[in-house]
Each structure stands twice: as C-alpha cells, then as structure tokens.
Length: 226
Image 1 (tube, rainbow, N blue to C red):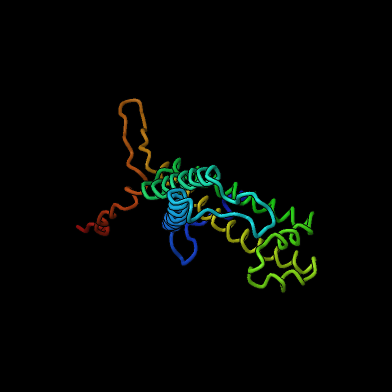
Image 2 (image 1 turned 135 degrees about the horizontal axis):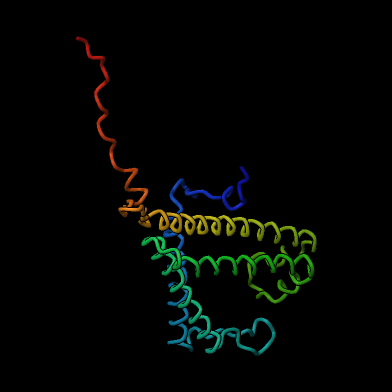
C-alpha cells in the first residue's frame, strides 16, 4: 500500500512530547507576546518622538531610520500579526481548522523570505561586507568580524540561517499536523445516516462508539443432558 509524503510525515506529537494542538497554542501565544511587546515599543515611540527619534548620523547620511510613517506601518503589521496568532490559538483550542490557515500561510511566507535571504547571500557575498560597513562604530566585535574573509563570513551566515530555517520548517510541520488533526477530528464527529428500505438509523460519532464499554459476555454454552 502506497503512503503519500503527507501521511509519512504526519504526527500528533511535537517538541517536549506534547500534542501538536498544545504546541500550536503555545506557539500562537508566544508570537502574540512578541508582537505585543513590539507594538508597545512602537506606540511608546510614537507618543514621545523626541525621546525615541532615531537618526542615522552614525551611518554618514541625514536620512531618518524610523520616521513616523514607517512606525505606523510597523505598528499596523504588529497588530495584524497579533490578530493572526490569536486566530491560530483560538482555532487550535476550539478545534476550528479554518482559523489556523492564516497563521500557517504566514509561516510559509516567512520561510520563503528567509530562503531568499540565504540565496541572495550566496549569489552576492559582498553584501555582508557592505552591511558591516553600515553598522555603527560602537557595534560589538565589528572590527573582528570585518577582518574575516568573505568565504568565512558567508559560511557562518549560511550556517546561522540554515539553523533558523530548520527550526522554522519544524514549526511549520507542527502547525500543519495540528491542522490535519483538527480537520480529521472534525470529520470523525460527523453523524452518519444509514437508510434502508424501512428505517433510517443515526450512527454515533466514532469516538463515542469507541468509548462505550463493551457489554457483558454471554454465559458459556453447555450441552443439555437428559
């Protein structure tokens, strides 16, 4: 019997031996907390622009790194991410598969962006040196890092990005397995109607029929004697 690749990688357990539904809830709450902190910082910066206004004078130009327009866009993105993560958490908790799809799509999009970054580093390795030159002078270990060769820098950055991509791929698999679990559980709870010529029988869900304790076995058969 042939097994599809989706079924081969399907599992109901994830890291720390917890269920994929629990892992998706924890992941959604964690993303919500991170984006909530980012949104709080951005709103604080918008409320007091004189204190949190960042300029790029250290980078030898007069352009602002974060102006009000960029902060508003970043705040809107953070708010949208909180909504998407909240939908995934609610969908995993209430067994609503459709609510998990936006968070799964975000994971795919984020994985694709990181993959494009890795490809761009391989194609244009000199971009790492250009990025190091734009860093402030007080950046830790800037001179030591800049003294490394381009090949060494590319290998270090690719190794770092590869670890991040592997971890993100694992999280994508956990959320996808949670989506499959919720979808399969929802389909198993559908009531089935079996119609014959005279009657219509309503079958209970599979989980309910399995949980019913078996009836007591009949007494053993003995041969009657005269």
